[in-house]
Image (cartoon, rainbow, N blue to C red; front, top):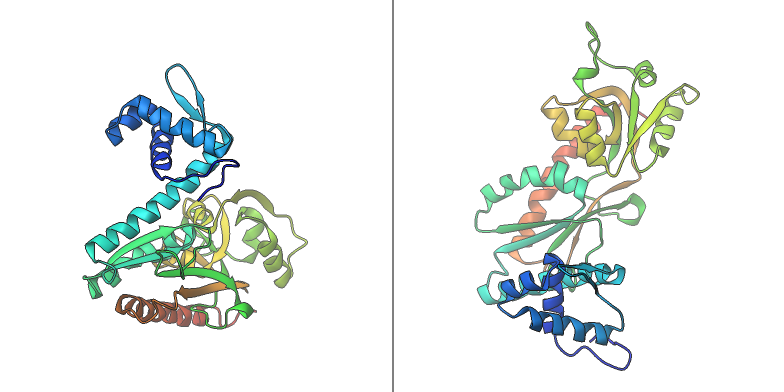
Length: 308
């Protein structure tokens, strides 16, 4: 229950009406979806505001907009209602053994996992997959997620799926006429793409003794998947993890700058609920992804055998 000071929230009805009105930005449209009257929706939201002790909407003549606190609450309510509906549907349909819910980060989902899930489905067509890409941590012990794939510091997670390295990649479009490949001196001739910060570029440049050179760091991105796509588009040379660039390298959308790589302090590991670890769907997924990761590890180790 949510404590609203002198009053306590005792019903989910107001939250459901609030969630719907927040999505539509209209009591009238929310009423149409919920088969209620606009007045009933408005009253439920007003009562919810009284319980909360703060306004959820700003009322305009023809529409409504969320307040700052209303926006924060709307995000939380939408997530909780989604989890609740998912759980009810699973219990109602008896599909707990046939639906595998996977959580992982945006970059890993986009550039590695999603393209491979078809292979898993071919092996186990009876298992339906639900993939949630999010940077937020999930509670596998008490939530609906069956398995989570995250990356963390190697020393803290001895049971890693894959020990990552960062590699230098570029689009073939950057090659000049007659040029077969880019090499270390070319780093000063193109923008150097990065995500979050330039710290890993500094580490690589220092490792290869060229830190004092002149380099252009004019293009940063929100995550490695976006930085990789920018490299595919020929916007510059990127320093990204091998797993994120692997498929683009295999289809020749990117090329590897040979001999240049550095260790990455965070690698991938699998998180499984202790109460779900022996379920057949989880056992099958764990075996499959461990095989996939082991194959990629052998490939990476061979490619970077001569690098620091």
